[in-house]
Amino acid sequence: MMPDLGKYAEAVLSSYAISLGLIVALVVLSVLRARKVKAQLAEVEARGKTGGKAQEQADG
Image (tube, rainbow, N blue to C red):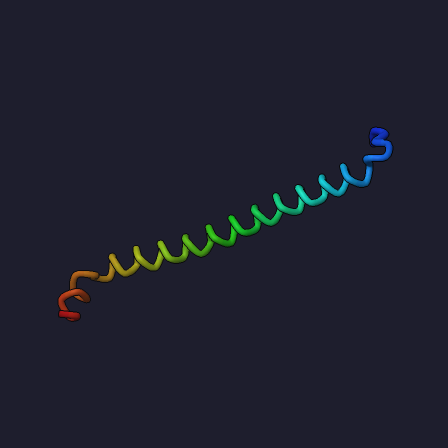
């Protein structure tokens, strides 16, 4: 049940909507960033397991 917000109903509800939208956007961006970082970490770890020192010696 929604409380009676009177003449401020539009301002209050739009503020809630904007806040909720921003929170959702932050969660989505955080999840996407976490996936990207996880993939980068896996790549670095894979490079380390396949002989990163051998690659460094080949590079000079």
